[in-house]
Length: 396
Image (cartoon, rainbow, N blue to C red):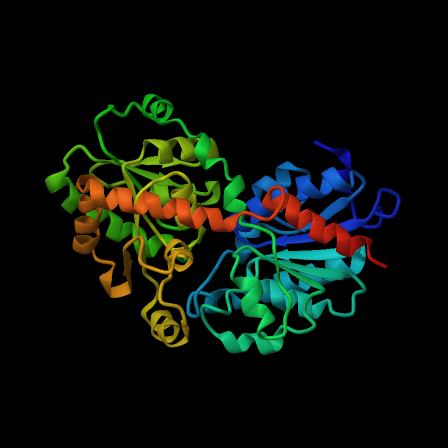
C-alpha cells in the first residue's frame, strides 16, 4: 500500500497535491477505490482524504466518518436521518476547509454530494462529480440547479453526454465501472465446492440491495417467494450477495427461514456465485449490469415506502427502471415493481427462468448488446476517469 495515499490534515503540501473524495454507498466505494489506483498510477505523489468505505480504506484512506451514515435513499426514508446527515455535511465542509485540497471529487450519492459541492463553491478546490445524476430518469428540472456545481462531470452511460449537452451542460462519458468488476472471472464449480452445494441444485441469487432502507422491504417478500418456488423446485438453493456492512442485518432477518440462504460478502465469492447461478432476482441498479456481465438471467424487483412510490411515479420519466432495459431500449428482463413485487409473481417469474431455455437465451443475447455500449474509447473506465481528472488538475 503506497504510504502517500494518506496524510493527516496540515501535512499535505510536503507530500503532493491533495484530492478529497466522497463516496456515499457501496458502489461508490468500489468506483472510488479503482479511481484512487488509476490516479496514483498517473501521479504517485497524490494524497487522498475524505469519506469512503472498506475498499477505499484498504488503500489508505482514513474515512472522516463511516460511509454507511450516508447510505440512505427514498423521500420518506431519509427524514429520520436528517439531523445526522446535516452533522455529517458540516464535518465534511469543515474538513475540506481545514485541508484545503486541490480537488474535491464526489462520487454518485447526489442527494449529499451536490449539496456538498455547493457548500464548498468558494473553497478554491476544483470540483468533479463522478457518476452523472440521473436527471434524465426523474426530476429533470433539477438540471437548472446544476450550473456552477462542478468544474467537470463524468458520466457512466453513453447517452448521458448528449442528454446533458442538450440542456447546456457538459458531461464526459468515461465508461461504466461494471466492465472492471471481474464478474467474468467467476468459477461455478469452486462456488459449489466451497459451500457444499450439489451439482444439480439450481442456484437462485437474491439481491435485496445495499442500503438499510431497501433490505427490510425486499427480504420478507423473498422468503415467501422461496416457499412458493420450492413447490416446483424443491432443491433450489438461495444465495444472497451482500456488502459486508449489511451482513449482520440480513443474518438476523433470515435466522428463522426454513432453508438458510448462503450469505456471500466476498467479491470473488460473489463472482463465483454468479457463474454457478441459474437465475437471479435483484433490485434495480448497477446489480443488473453485474449480473448481465455474468450472463445470469434475471428479473428486477423493487419495493419502497408507498408515499415514496406515489411521488416517484409522478416524477419518473423513463419507461424502465432496470439499466439493462434502458440501454437495450426494450424490456429484456421482467420488472416487478411495488404492487407487482409479490411472492407469487416473483415465484412464477423465477420458475420460468429456471425452466424456459428460450427466455434465458434471449436475455443473454441482449446482455452482450448492452455491455458493448458501456466501454470508453480507450482503456478502462477508471483510467478514462483518471485522465479527465488529471487534465483538470493540471490545468492552470
